[in-house]
Length: 202
Length: 214
Image (cartoon, rainbow over all chains, first blue to last red; front, side):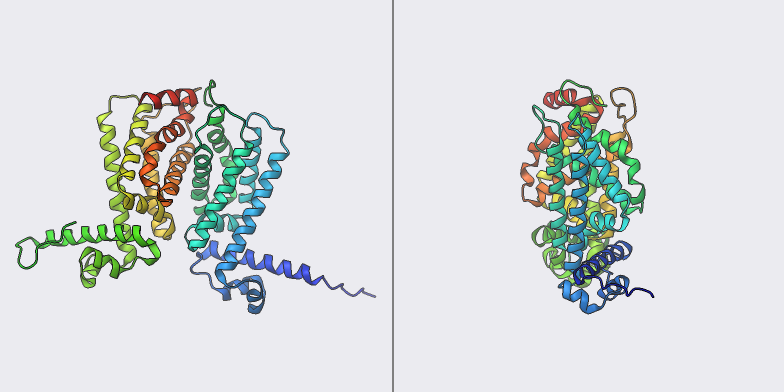
């Protein structure tokens, strides 16, 4: 006799549906742009009822912002874990973090495009959250950087902005899956200021 | 930009048209600076430029069309200021010329907050058409940077992705300061920005030496 299928806990189902809605928003905004993405398309892609979406999110913008925040939080966790796994050394921590970030983006092209391309022009609130995410990575880089005598106080901001720009271009050209290939150039670029005083650039 | 005298002025239609177009571009730049992209409307632009709505539509199909023209004009002005600074230093080696180009760039932006806002801030906010232009402008600077650039220490050519990161990082940094209302102060960033641009090529020590020699 076939055992009856156990009912999944309600909370698990709810969380899973939230994830499907956020993923659907990421995919659709990457495919069509935020402006052209409709709630009807999102619920259809996510396989949920319209009511379910509105039980969870006030509307399209809140869903987009939640999807953005969730992706950024996961990216930070991934990068922090990779950095923590490397004994602090001459740039090894930074390289490990950068590699983890590139692999994270490459594995999630829709989320990559949502966060790094669409968010800038979606809504003013999205642009603000994008800036906050950049600041979070600037802080991460400062923490992972080798200790130094003197460095320009804008260094990490410029490095993160530069890496973001290179990634944005590739992601916009639908090359998210291969951003891993940029690791040698990007790590060379990020590490060159830390090879620092008294040492030649790579 | 001055409005033409009322009534018969005997100026050619081409001149009048060009003058109107320039006033609309200047009007958009100012309004954009004051209220941002979302709130900039054809009405506001027309009123600022002292051009009627119907005359607006003789020159531009839409607000975005005017925006594109204003953006292109802004980039041209910035490029011209940077290039003429470089022409004055054409006999210098590459690293100090990059420093001088950056100095001219910062000066051009700092002197004109609406220009800086249009070119650095609103470029990324207003959708794909603007993004393409912002990207093309940065690509232009990358090409300029790579012209006559030396190899890095050790002899390997600096990869293009590195130059894209240098230009993109500086643009993002300046854009953030401009957006925060700190446009006039960006000239103080020259030492940091020049060091940032030169370090992948010559290392930090030499970059700092070149910057302080400027």
